[in-house]
Image (cartoon, rainbow, N blue to C red; front, side, top):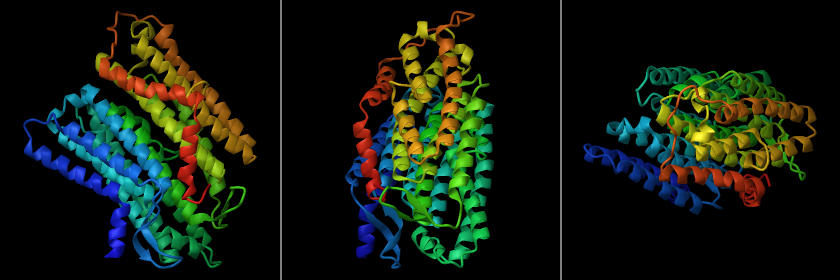
Amino acid sequence: MANLYQSLELIRPEIILSIALLVLVTCDLIFHKNKKYIPYIALGGLLLTGIFVIANSGASGFAFIQSELMGKIGLLAIDNFGTYFKALIIITSILIVFFSFSSEEIQKITDRIGEYYALIFGMILGMFFIVSSVDLILIYLSLELMSLSSYVLAGFTKLRDRNSEAALKYLIFGAISSGLMLFGISLVYGLTGSTNLYVINMMLQSPNANLFTLAFANILIFAGIGYKISSAPFHFWTPDVYEGAPITITAYLSVASKAAGFALLIRFIKTTYVSFVDPVGNWQLLPVFDWKSVLIVISILTMTLGNFSALWQNNLKRMLAFSSIAHAGYLLLGLVVFSNGGMLAILIYFAIYLLMNLGAFLIVMLIANKTGSEDIDDYNGLGHSSPYIGIAMVIFLISLTGLPPTAGFIGKLYLFIALVDAKMITVAIIALLNSVVSLYYYVRVVKHMYLVKPEKEAPAVIPNLSDKILLTVLVAPVLLLGVYFQPLVDWAKSSLEVLGLM
């Protein structure tokens, strides 16, 4: 009972989230004729969860102890690394609730708004467990909880045929990747006799490990994780699902789901395959699988495919989908160096990516509300007819490119520093060239906004006060972090200390 009580203390944010989910469903059933308070209940639940996430900052330990080997090891590792990603997920979720207030797609389904927020809370609960799980079975169950909710949300509005198409494609690809991952987990269990990552690490140090079977299992497990982070060659679902899903859900998948996937990948490799971290900060991997070569190839392939595919897109949602694929490639670069500096770069990049990517999707949503389209031609002359939106979009696009004085430059700077420190100059040059390619399709949007005259008189997109405030909340830190980023760096460093990386 003492262990159970301690475990419940460590997962208070998840408990609050679960209670909020039950309250949401109950209120939806009771007030089925008047659902205007449902979004505010959801917002209150997220804020309360966020308070408990902050309160858990600094806490460390294992929840639900399952093994006495190497000390007490449980199903969940509670530390600042997980808290960092939980904070990013909560911030993203709160912003998505505000997005939903302004989204015409969501306003048209007010009769099902309770189910909409309940599914979002299901996703959040799954992501919270993903970022802390150190057991393969719990990892799989958490991924399924997140995935099943997101499959439904992708086609939730049912306003167009493409909504159903997005959900079906997402479900089919997701089912395949989940099956592959589960097969890989079964092979690892067969090799080591355990599903706990710490115990597996200890078993893999034995000279009797079957390296061929282990390599095959790792590839299968990475297929499941790679699907969630949209890395090549598991990225094919991304543009179709992003285009077909409601814009609020597209924005949510591009940030929160990707954050959970990267947290899982980092923890999986660090816990299972790293023998120790040397005094300089470099990870020493067990010589059982060449993660470095595999991830270098995947990261280069991901960023190159994402950037070059984005060049030909006229639909802004598809363009931002391929852009998010490219950013997944950049983020993988922070992992391939296998060092403290690389991990620090990933955490900094993710916080900045959250702001600039959500900002770009918010503007796409505001314009789609007015025009009913996401085509780039609808942006002709927008910079003159809607100056505030035009300026904000330019800032977000410059930041996504990685140019100063925006926060995107700081994110890429730390990534390139990590690559140079690891003497991976060739990979750094390839990443730099990819950034140059991305400049073309981002600037193309700016050209349409300021240099192309609209063929017909288009209505000005004038955001209301709440939309202006939301835009400002996203624009201001993108500019501020471009010149004053030390607090973010300090937060990222403190989040890595408990993981044993700083």
